[in-house]
Length: 368
Image 1 (spheres, helix red, strand yellow):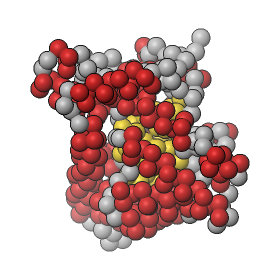
Image 2: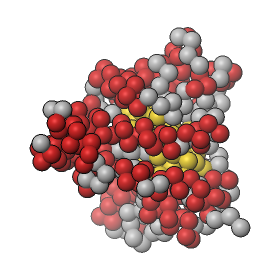
Image 3: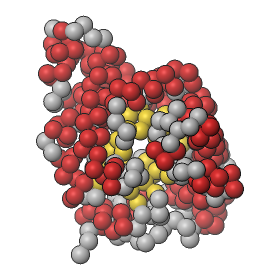
């Protein structure tokens, strides 16, 4: 009898772990998740690296080498994180091969302080791709306005991209347009389109956190009845956008040349409200070609007691529209909330990055 994570994978959802550390790689724990938890990829971000490197486990030897070589904190971070990602790519090389590039992916993010700098984002994306030097790496670029142009250019160069920090349906449409424009440019440049993959990371739980806070302030029975419904509605409608934008005649022409659809990825799927089911943002978001990147705690909750349906998205488009309309009717602006969340998301990653720089700088100093 299969476990819930195996059922989730069988129903079309790729399970990616939202965590990475050197000890997890070197101990074999990461590799073991492929078989025991159906994990087929890994995502990272500045917060994850700040946590793993900050603990220092497994990094002392490389930090010492970098210190004696006179590396700055920024240079050390580049060397440390790209090594972890390259090693993780090797762990998932077989998954990558057997899935024809569909899975077996490991993501690494450009420096968050570049979120509003198109040209510098493109430069660093190319540097990260070259340094990791693995076909199954994905470069994470935030879906800011500046990020959209960078996504197109990086894709055009044949580099696979994980677009992160998507909150609104309109921005998601712009992300898909940026990806498709990049694919068209890659085609005209002679790149093998079958080798270029992309995911679009739609953040889930933070939408509920922000909107629920506003509903509670309103306090009416109508407002309270809408609690914890916005995030699922938003994420389900994102999947509808995916279906719409990858069935156009223009896309069909690119697909016939070997292009891959940019898959929707559900991120921030750990539940923040203890009153909710700890598997909510996984079991209620099941559909083909979806990726769900989970913190380990959420993954283990699904493994332990998740009830996985065949599909929990495609029958809910109308009621999802109704939920968002009802929230707007309460005076809560969807556009304002999603813009706020995008700005906060960038700011949070910058804070984590600065913490990472400080901890690595201290470690380098201590290693001299």
